Length: 159
Image (spheres, rainbow, N blue to C red):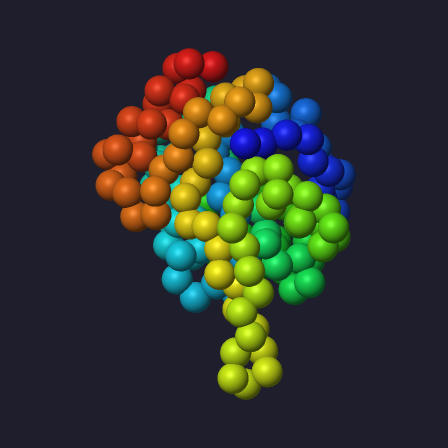
């Protein structure tokens, strides 16, 4: 689980897995038009960072879109402005996102809606990686803050 990638952040700057090699990373895949899982998880992630206190400086939380057609850098920046500013948003071309989804073994599927629009069905767990990019575990959707923070503390301490 994991591997190389090349995406762009909310400023349009190129980002690779090497960009994150200085700190452990909690990575979540979702999309900005998500009605429930994504805003809930991003809100909770801000709480985790607050609970970590100074240790939060030694962790990176990354939100990778599974819907690059709608989630441009500008859209990601606007959406993430409602959450903790320490959360990094990443997007890219459909091909780049498909490669990351495959390498990180994330489930994502476009689901047509009756009105002609669509939504995205996707994995809901936050994936944890040490600073070397090695997968170490997950935080499940709506896992208790106590458990999530304990996992993140172990992740930071182990790196």
